[in-house]
Image 1 (cartoon, rainbow, N blue to C red):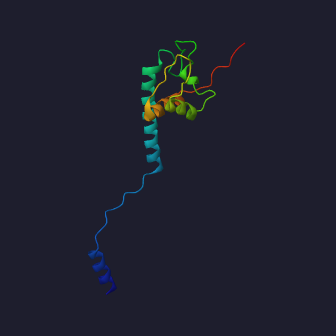
Image 2: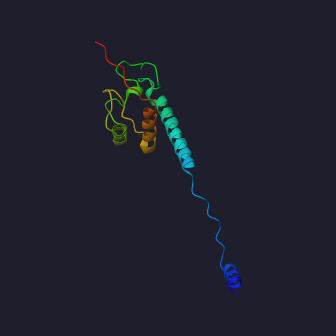
Length: 127
């Protein structure tokens, strides 16, 4: 009787669709890597369009203007968060004649992600 009762109860209730297993850590990490890569590439495009006339914008080379540091040194003495805040708040950053850029929140995040991706310590000053 108990087997029959179980079968009849099982037949009465709606069956729930199977629940997909949660994403694995590697899938989540891959998605984050893809998102970060997209941010870096978007930031690179913004930087190439807006900054190359004054700054070296890649991982090597010298800036066209001697008073404009290569962007690979941009975070020496400045945190990524501070740079992001400066761009986001429209605070003037850099040389007196440097334009105040407004890349919007997403563009600012992308620019900062790109700048972070190429960072290196500036060369030691020689006397």
